[in-house]
Image 1 (cartoon, rainbow, N blue to C red):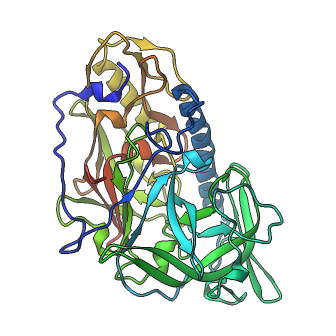
Image 2 (image 1 turned 60 degrees about the horizontal axis):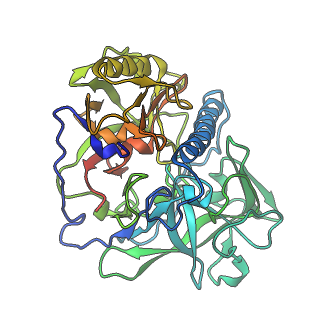
Image 3 (image 1 turned 90 degrees about the vertical axis):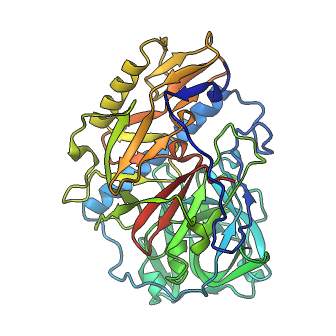
Length: 458
């Protein structure tokens, strides 16, 4: 056996939902491709599956450490600017952009293709719900890493304008400075990566969902990085989709900017599969969505916290302390959904309960050696197909995330070794993109909720 498609949950069926994503408006489908897709142009052919999974996990560990560090800083009293006013918004339209895997470009997980400046310059940016600022590498470079596209030159854009030190955008920066009334920014990541430079505005263009063509979003705040170092090799920068006041969705007016959605294809899915990152009303399918309220962490504005209520394995709710999924009064704990984390991390008590229930439901399968952070792995080489217990994540409001087997039992080598794709953590739980694959995930910030619809990548 060499594919997860031979693994199926017991008594689990997932009907395909095929609907337009906007009432009466056709949606343009842009290609989404994972680095490991068989026909992906970004596939690293000299890597084995095991090597690719190891590299993913190494990046993932850095990502999780960064998230935990940022939360600890906020909880322990490192505050942002006192000003949190929302910025001037751009006109209301639905728009979207292509999304492809970022692993192939050497950083991140998934990338979005956008254009910046006038005339517009196309570039790949990391798509990240765990960050707020849009930043990109800019000429002249004090230090710039290699990227696939030409480095952006702000002096060649007629719409580029630096921000003043007393501008609302500058005052909303977590880390900022000022030289000659020119606003400066800096973003740092837990793996040692950083970007620093001028904070400015410019035009950003994405594809329209109605009638084709481009939607030009004017005066979008962005970091123009002249000193950039770290693990962003290949990408021009990062598109922040977090909840903070400077995030990209918050630069769009309330009729549009409070809503966006994405659907991530699997790492073994052919790259011709289509999907998109969509903004505006078209981001919400007309039917089939189950929403759950977002939780509020008053000390941490960026991350999307969900009100998770439990986990079931094989249809049985696990015995897990309610505190395992809850935010405490200081802002610790809770459950985050994140586009940039691959493997779902569960608070240790919750993970231990999941692992033991899953092992009990697969007692007829042969356990094999652990693989990196995966401690529950099976040798399925002698089996053409197997039945495994269903795994469902439950959220307040009845928004159950009933996972396909491919979202939690994943191949890690070419010898038919499959592992349970969850891990334990001492920090907040994080729902990663392996578990999100194949679902359209809707971020409806107008109503402070997140929704899920299966089979919405096409």
